[in-house]
View 1: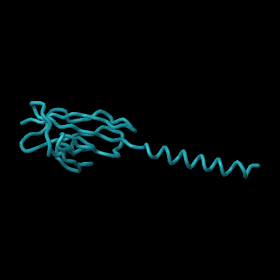
View 2: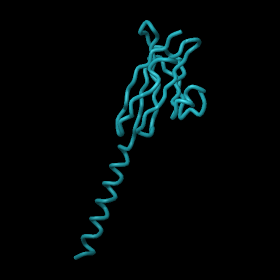
View 3: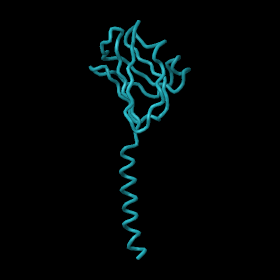
View 4: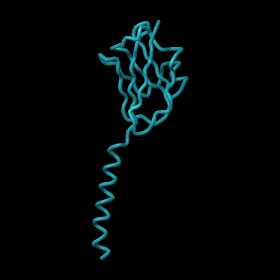
Length: 117
């Protein structure tokens, strides 16, 4: 009787494990806009763990370029806060909107950043 229950129990555990790992993510979608509110394609967006790294533009966790809709997507991040640098040409977000809130686990977190001269 125990052997008959062991196999189905193991199968259920494997299925639960496979199902839950599919939803283990923390993503961030950054929308970059200029001072007029227009989206900025081709802007470089970088994430940093520390303020020191952010200020030196060193040791980025990840860097992406915005698409034609002004969006940059970061996948499978740690659910923590990040310093965020966005720049295109002589415009950037330095001095404003530099740190994210703590990212929520198993969510697509969203933030909009304004770049200006």
